[in-house]
Length: 256
Image (cartoon, rainbow, N blue to C red; front, side):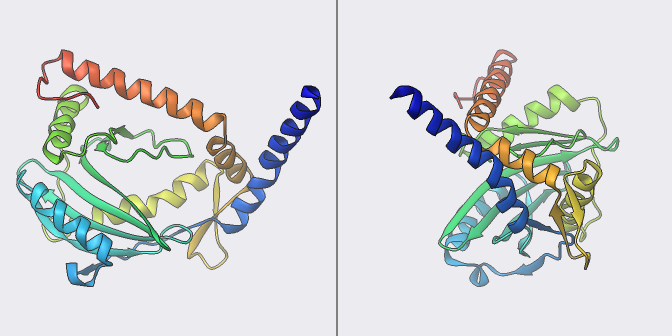
């Protein structure tokens, strides 16, 4: 009996691994262009507006200027993206509160980021969702979803900058054009994945579609048991980083 159950489970898992990439390839796309439109808080969906109203003064209290709230439109399949974007013109650190909206659902995270003149980028955020594609080698991302205190997250980011990029020169953005930094990041996503063989431009050039290679690898990384292993490895790496910061004197940090 147990042999029969094991065979049935194995067959089911094999079918999921075989068929899921087909569905993902048929439905996924990513916008080739990003045209953020600045809007007021009153024009945002209620849940997004409430989130931004709560976080904006917290980030401003850290010395950041609100560049604006932006409707970034449909970037990924069946989603709508919004961001509140900030810049600290004294340190040239950037911050954003981003919200991704599906029908009857919203996900959000806070991020601090710093770009350096050699092209390196360091990001510290509360996004607990791991990417399903290889990371950008020039961007180092630290994820601490348990840190919901904005000041603590920023202090963590500054310590990470000191640790990994303290010898580098920070890259500024021209005043009045700060949002172009976000546009460049978004519009580099498709071409970067095309170089890796994960995506190809659509016929009209408006979006990027998955290749079979991309669809298979993205899907398999998101399925059990691979997804559980990836989360465990990443959680251990972030906990190790946290302990390292504590040992280097960041006494204000609480366990993430």
